[in-house]
Amino acid sequence: MAEGVKGALDALARAGARVEKRDLPEAAEAHGAAITRGNVAGVEFLASMRAELPEWLETLNPILAGRLAGPDDAANVAASDYFLGLKALKHLAAAAQARLAGIDVLACPTIVSSPPTESEVAELDAYLPHNRRMHQNTYPINLLGLCALTMPVALDKAGIPVGLQLIAKHGDDEKLLAAAYAFEKVLGTGRQRLGVPPLCR
Image 1: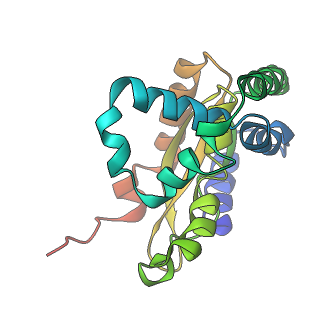
Image 2: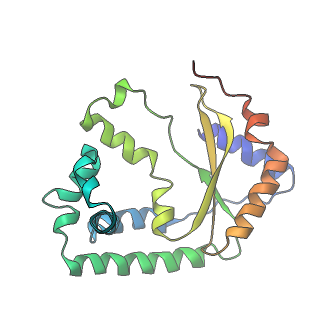
């Protein structure tokens, strides 16, 4: 994953893009705040389900159902804790917005490791760590209210596409799309860069 993303960034740098290392500590903090300070995402998901699709609650997979109805999860979060979580995320979102000032896009891997095999996630306890790892670079961006997209830039050792996630400030959707279009002109489309995907028969 890292090599594929670095190769894409090196190609962009050779084409004239200015590439600098930057940190976004608010991403890690947002992930923790959303869970430990009121389970914001879980509470909002549960409220949405109850309002829009209450009959679907009984059909949720065990992972989502456990997050909504466990003793420490969404169904039992105090309103004061939920609003404290929202307040923390609002503060972090403002800090992230300020940190991205003067930057066209922040680039990072979309996911940090190759997807697991079916056998590796057959049991629920084994699935959970893989699930958390898969969204650790994307979930916090949603929590911070930033805009992002992903574009395929390489194949990993297993032949699975590697994504380059581009992140921009809230409201900078047009700038983000323009950057992605410019990057694609240098890197090529997904088909040009990765080849034609195999057909499932």
